[in-house]
Amino acid sequence: MLSKRSRVRMRNFGRRFFLRPQHCHCQSGDCVSLSELGAGRDAVITCNNDIKTIERGLYHGRRISVFRNEAGEPNLVIAVGDARYVMDRRLALLIKVRVV
Image 1: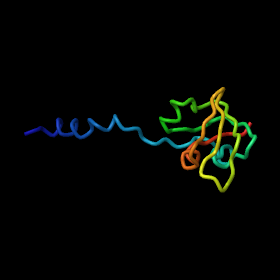
Image 2: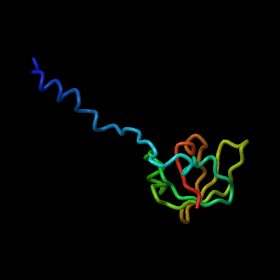
Image 3: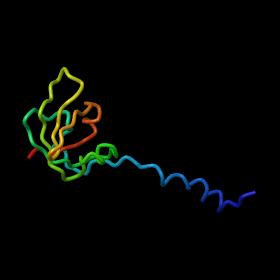
Image 4: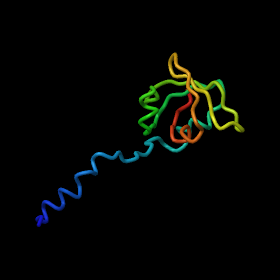
């Protein structure tokens, strides 16, 4: 039988392995989602919590430009440095940017 102290340790053990979603610390109106940016616009990423896109180079403070963003299409084309990516609109909703 585990003591109360050991039970609490076991209950909290796995919690540090899962990332908690963090909220954007921008003031209202400072940043917009990447999916709302028009074609030909440049922006700086202010909030991104998706690990897969961070590994592609879409991290906080990185400058990006949007090549194609049409409302009827499910994807948009963006550039990060020398790389070009086709990004799903649902993923682009999670990334917050500030227009430069």
